[in-house]
Image (cartoon, rainbow, N blue to C red):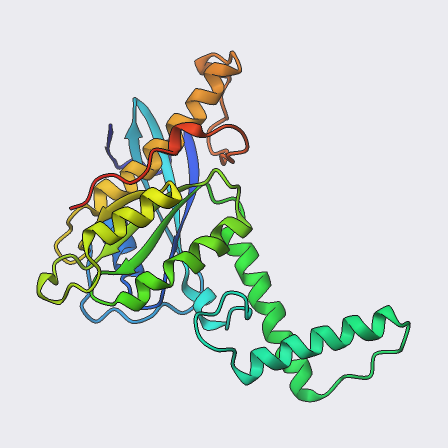
Length: 269
């Protein structure tokens, strides 16, 4: 089991974990509740990339979590294949520009499709892809968050999961989180819906309340514990002894067999 640990400069493993999900589902408050035990009712959508850290003891080892909030990722419009709504004129423009550019290139024709609108559209599309890649790079765990009072945020979970899997190792440990469980009178996504999706996609599952601090610690601790056990299992199978693991401060990337993670959903609040 995982337990709290305060010495931030003394750790055995460093794991990068990302928070993903629609704007307004409570990702920033989950982060602040877990790392600083703080909550703000006036919390606004994050601007710019933010991350915080916290260390836990897992099976006698100190695991430091570097947790990233989606933040700036939400400021840029996703590509058409991801966006949950009909493509905007800017998205359509980017798609046409890219198609036109590829067509001209295939014919050996000089590129002359350089309208200001096209340049802006392509710039936004490129910027989004760059931010997305940087955000997910090196992540070995994720909390995929939706708001239990807004069904639309749950409907978009599948798209977020696809983007996560497109940019990370397929064996990344993912916890599906139904946040704001304290708003019981406003629930629009039933617990069984969340569990069913988690089981279908081989995710872990919990319902949380950043406001009441319900299951927040458990959700993060479960993700970190599973990542650690995967790493430990690989070390044992490789014949490594306890002293031959990664050095202090070294980030861990999951590359090989992680069948132990594929257990289906668990633990709703």
